[in-house]
Length: 299
Image 1 (cartoon, rainbow, N blue to C red):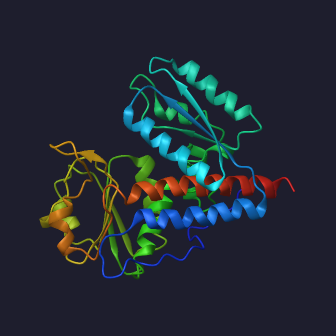
Image 2: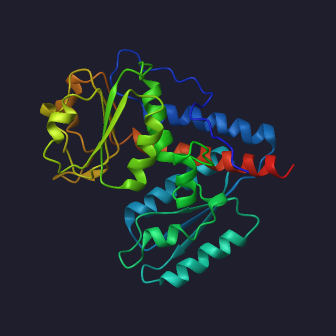
Image 3: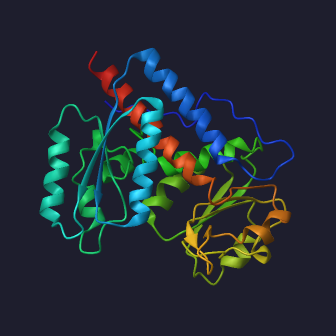
């Protein structure tokens, strides 16, 4: 049975007073408190299994953050670490084992994978009913057909961040700067239900600067430090910065040149502390939503 997952959560997010910086940590904490209450009230026992391949420090850090967040709200966390040299067959067998494990409600494959493994091929092995990221072709198609089983957590996070500004969205023009259709296609589809127009553009497109200068909302997932500069931004724009990069000094920065852009915008997400905490919170939200669907469908 396919059910529609609501985009709006019930938590009321209060904007930071007199600030253009969107506090992703605060929003995430409010969402997690709501989820914790839901798990307790409905006596749920959500089980999330994370599969991590290799020794990438960033991936291990992200999994550690997810584990801590699960513990905070009451989601049972299972972690499976495979060596970087594992074969596609070994990884597929692990996914299938988790598909067959009735105790495991949802599965997350931590990306990126080592270069010798095809992400699309391995994602396709995940049972759609357990696909907490919503990345399987079946789940993406359900979303595009407006009958979603799940909405990818990053997409939900972007929507929640935009809603937290308390600005009207239905008259705005948005631009998504990214290359990955796995991300851009679902996000553009969901945004079109809330925003007047949505343009998807690659970061190397020659028309990029002229398009961003006209955009009321800029969403960047480029992966280049300080790529978006002040001369690319329309005054009073809203900026959602998904990029996580290291600058020349080793500091963590986004795709946006934050210091130069901040005086121009109406709202902007910081890096770190913006999109990252919300994405983790939405992973938890999707875990609970899938468990609720399973519970309702077995009654």
